[in-house]
Structures are given as C-alpha cells and as structure tokens.
Image (cartoon, rainbow, N blue to C red):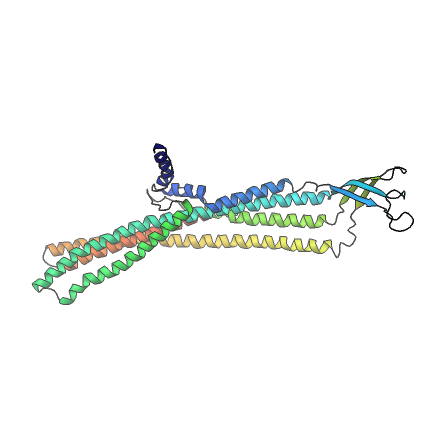
Length: 409
C-alpha cells in the first residue's frame, strides 16, 4: 500500500508542477522546452547533419560475379571445361566521381544544414511569439473580466436607488429598465471576455503543455528600438532561411557544372578456367565522355542558374516585405501608445473628475443618486477601455521584439 501511495504521489508531482502559475519568462522557457514542433525541427536538423557526413564520400565499391565465354553451340556446347575461353570471374569495381562534383555535393549538404537550422530558429521564434501573445491575452483578459465584474456589482446599487425612487414617485417607470439594459450590455461584453480568456488559455496550453495554465507576475517591460530593429533585419531567421536557399541553389549550379567533367571507374577481376588452362586477371578503366554538353549538361546548368537567380530575387522580396511589415508594426505601436496615453492622461482622469463632481452634487442635493451612479459606471468603462489599450501596446511590443529582434523580459 505504501508503494502504491508513493507511486501515485510521483505521478501527481509533474501535473502539480505544471499547475503552478506561469510568469511571462517561465511560459516562454517551458514552451521552448516542450513544443513538439521545435523537437521536430531539431530532429530534421540532426538528420541534415548526419546526411552531410556522407555527402562527399566515394560510392560503395561493386562486387562483380559472372561466367564469361560459356559455349552454347559447337562441339563444347554446355561444357565449363572443354573451351579454354570459358571462365568464372570475380572482381571489384570502384566509381570515382570527379572532385568538383564531390565538393558540390558537400556544399549542397552544408546548405541543407543551414536551411534546417534556419527553419528551426524560425519555428523557435514562432513558438515564443505565440506563447507570449497567449500569455498577454490571458493576463489582460483576466484583468478586464475583473473590471466588468466590478461594473456588474455596481449595478446592484443603481437598481436599489431606482427602485426607491419609483416607490417615492420621483422617477419615471421607464427608468426601472435602465439598470437591466446596462446589465445585459455588460453581460454581452463579459461573455466575449470569458471566450477570449478560454481561447488564450487553450493557446498557452498548446505550447507549454500545461492543461490549465494560469499567469502570474507582471507583463514584460519591452522597449522597442526602431533603429536597432532595422539594422538587424538581415540576421532574422526568415532571412537566414532565404540565405540558405541561395546557398543551396548555388551548390546546385556547381553540381550541374561538375557533370561536364568526366567520372572514372576502375575495376579489377580474376577469371578461373579449367585446370588444363591458366587463370586470367583483368584491370579496366572507364571514363565518361560528356561530348554533347550543349544538349545535355548545359541546359541543366542554365536551369540551375535561373533557380539561383530566382532565389536571390526571393531574398530581396523577403527583405522588403520584412522591412514593410516592421514599419507597419511600428506605426501601429505608435498609434496604440498615443491611444493609451490619451486614455491615461485624458479620458480616465476626466471620467474620474466627473464621477467626483456628480457625487458632490448628489451630496449637495443638486443631483439624484442614479445619475451619480451612472457617472461611476462611466468611470469603470473608461478604466476597462484603458486596459484594452494597454493590452494593445503590450501585444505590439511582444510581436515586434520577438519577430524583428530579441525580447528582453
């Protein structure tokens, strides 16, 4: 029984550890360590490195077995020993591809390693980005849901006030519907926010492996440096993938050109004849003759050159696209910063001031309580909107720093 309890405890420990709330940095670390897509890319990179080991090696030798000059007609037909030309042979041959071809194959293998490594880096950055955005969405989703719950709670006081005013005859009957209308509108927003939280939690679980992740701590304070990001465009994983494609295309060009050089094959064989005749040994050398390069090798060289040129155009197009995307994201980030600053410095302070003035007017008997409570609701709405804008700024910063640079939480 003790062993069973101990085993059950050991099985419970990993799930308990995964249930701990995740800070921003912990979520990224766990996703980097656990994401299956990253493990798949790492396996592909390991496979490319393993394949490169044999890329420029000589092919395996060939074992040759046969019977030569076996008579099928004449007086010695069907006899292995009647004719002095008949022999059983055994030999070995070895192909020697030209050195340029072997070097080109090695360069191609190196390029494939570069492609695999760049693809792994790109996937790693993609996983970190999606994990970071999911963490941000969950963090701000929970904060916005808490604000909406405060709004719903404040409606109870408004309902009591309207009910009292109706009883005293100081309010119109239609005013009894106002709290319910506000409650229905807030309930819609709350349902949307619950869905946003569930979606963010599912995305975070996808990458971290935690079945029910929770967030803790504060979001990262990420500083966006446009000049540094622009200067680092060429070192991004996406550009490294395109650079590796160019290297692979250039290796294909050299491989196509190497076909214009002859390959060599050397073979040796030993022929055993009947005891009455002597055994024979042979050595032979074969050389390819690429005599018709204009119709065979040159078209392949031209095709490889065209693909290499296309790879360079793809790189330039990719670079321009990255720069354009960076500028667009920077513009959005500046706009969201301005909106957040407006909310913090203008909209929320104005709503707070109005709520205070309305409460003072109610205390002085110049305003009814229902109107004062509506001002309080407007303040809560302004604070929720400020959280929305803060979340937009945080998402921008995360996307920009991870996509175009390296985040520093």
